[in-house]
Image (cartoon, rainbow, N blue to C red):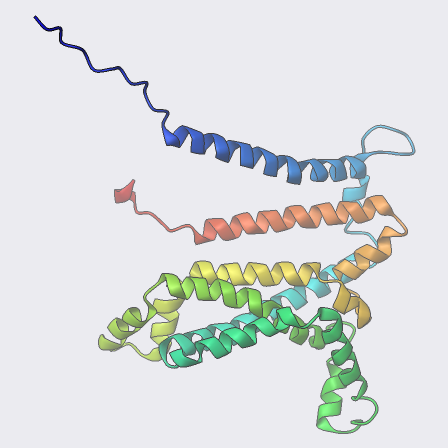
Amino acid sequence: MTAVLAPPVQAPAVPKRKSRNATRVVVLLIAGVYFLVPLAAAIWFTVQDKVHGGVTGEYYTSIPAAEGFAAALRRSLTLAVLTVLGVLLVTVPAMLAVTLRLPRLRPVVEGLSLLPLVIPPIALVAGVRDMLALGPNQLAGTPFGDALVSSQDPELPIILVVVYIVLATPFAYRSLDAGIRAIDARTLVDAARGLGSSWFAVVWRVLLPNLRGAVLGAAFLTLGLVLGEYTIASILLFDTLPTWLVKISGENGQLSVSVSTASLLFTWLLLLVVSLADRPKTSRSDS
């Protein structure tokens, strides 16, 4: 009789999902240490009482009453809101027109949107400063000269809004382009137009709701750029929140770091709000 050999027993294979989860945990831990340790060190620096010892929160409670803080914050927030509106008014119609009507111009528009990344900001602000100098000099008394002078109002420098719109265009374009590519815009427009909707209704009630995440992302990127921009505002001698932080850092380092930490936490909170607003609503029947 011939013996029947049993097939060799193979060791169970390790699921790939466990290895992927372990990799994700390691990456998240490294990222958490990289971001949270400096933040914790900054917070500890701001709550130290170097005079009496111990812990104090006076540097955070004294932020609203700090000299020049309220005006700088109000000016930066106003510039941020105007810049966000300007960027959306420029990029959204242009992107929709290129997608729906002029697809051959997409490479041209994409190339133009990259120009602010190619031109150094220091060169851009040097050209803007030379142009602004024409207002009270060579162009004095002309409508364009008066417009250049009024755009340099220290309380609300409109010229900063124009420059920030140019700087934020590449980031807004990328966010909106990703959102438009993720939806079949042409099919949605054809269906809405076939049902008798006007172009305004198509854009307002069909396209923009589907582009909510892309629009919110573009607005958030623009807001972060405006609230953190220092070079252009400093060279043009305008007092914004970043320039105020640099100025106050030489007088009170702990107060400066406190404002920076608070603004960082505010930005994270705003990003969380944007993420929650972009989350699709689920009906009760789906739960």
